[in-house]
Image (cartoon, rainbow, N blue to C red; front, side, top):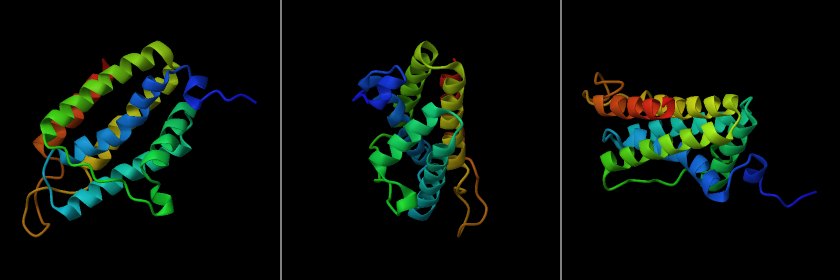
Length: 167
């Protein structure tokens, strides 16, 4: 039996692991704050993103399973009734840009150190989180009717994230 940390078994440093584990929640937050919504819609978006993170514990990728488990260990597991802490960045646009930059960094890290299948699964998972969040509640409209399911700002964040992960 070894005391080697989990991230080391995948070939990552503590800082690299922190980047990979921090991104799913950051993507969820950035996608949610891309367009200001009501508290009810924000809760729906958060729940949708958490479901994507939680479901990834059943991924065929050992790396994604380990990261999803680590995310929920740190932030709270919805299956245990725990709630994700609310993060409300003062500058939502700047926060989204930061998340996209960290996603590009993670993509390069995965290309250098991870199994290609694990890398692709992780990157696809991040985009799925964003897709789930931006599609969870419509914005605009009146009394919850009408409006855009995905706003221009949400679409711009999702597309920038996908591009950063594809490069």
